[in-house]
Length: 319
Image (cartoon, rainbow, N blue to C red):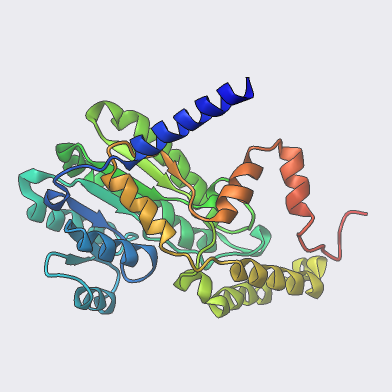
């Protein structure tokens, strides 16, 4: 009995491995547009796909980022300046992409641009603080997708949206988690809508990796300190200085868990773009696979208990 189950398990594993190893042909004929290529995952993916011979259109926020990327890649790669929070910039970038790809269409759209310097207790923040993350991570992503969707439809291509493990389990306050939950919802709905057009939509749900956003610990701490110092006296007294100090230490500890294996994320993106059978969701990072995603499936009372154990305690807490 056990031997039969083992044989069945091995056969399923081998079939799954073979199916996921099938790669598309004629990749060098395909255009891929990637946002957020100044640094981080977008930068790594642009270089990775360029080495594979694909036609990469790399969107950068700054001239400096675009110039650095050009110096490290082949003449095939083209850069486009893009601020995803500016609709005029998005429209201009879409026109440039349309001119470049022509009747070929756009095979891949990778929505990678992101912002995360917004961690902190929700009550400490204002609407403007939430909008910083929402405008980049969610609204900007939707704007880019809607502008480029006709080109993706023409190629019957792929859309790859970068979410986060924190888009499945909200572990910090601020706009980051709501924005990533929104990415999940938008991706799920548009994946179903575009299925009959031959378009596949994949989600990347990475854990914590060493990028400029996680290595810039001072930027996170400075933002948290700004929030604390701007609080009304009554609210600050309710939380207490000890709460702030514990939150800061917890934030530093979270950032300190960042994995140096950053290649895992662009590898998942590349598979989503080049595999015959791409996955719907990718969860690079052991913390994503073993902690965030499994805990997100637990009943709420268990996940709340586990997460609340590590939260700082306010002075004016319920007795």
